Image 1 (spheres, rainbow, N blue to C red):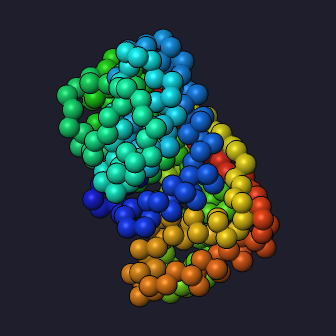
Image 2 (cartoon, rainbow, N blue to C red):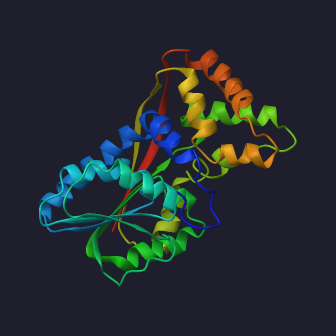
Length: 275
């Protein structure tokens, strides 16, 4: 779900592990929430042109496609071709849906090309967030809406916090910053609003949404975080070619705090509607 070539790379084995393990753990519930917010907008404008940014492996794409009116269209984009290839492979099929590689900070479409933009957990990865907001505002038609969500802080997302803290203890002199810096590093409400308004949006609604966060086992959750994210590349950069010891350490920590099978906690995100 990266948004620029300067952002972490989701490639190799990561996209499939991301989809198979992180998807059910943390993305599916919010994808359903996102689709539920899109539905009334489509009812009001059944011929809407929808742009999805940072579509990843297509979890939101498939849900929106299921209720897409015959006159509407959905263009799902991501800068990561490996992620988008998996999204194409996972797509269950629906008319009006296409896929295209695109950088959220430099969108290749004319002004006012879309009536609705959706983005699930991509904004945190955009290296120039104001520029990405400006681009979204530019390609959005007058009266259009930009729906996006962002993870709340580690304080409200205990599973990834525990994974991060466990890995930090394993590498105290050279910690892997990915989770703290990227997905869970942009949760300040005032800063989110500042960036959104700096991008040209004048109307701004923010809502906090919390769901259960449940994996079949601590082993599944550990694999999701260690091998389904750029943490895997972080291990490789530190000369570690076998992620198993790190994964097992995370599994033990998660099992101790949240249970071995199932592994249960909660998660919280911030949902924004801007226009």
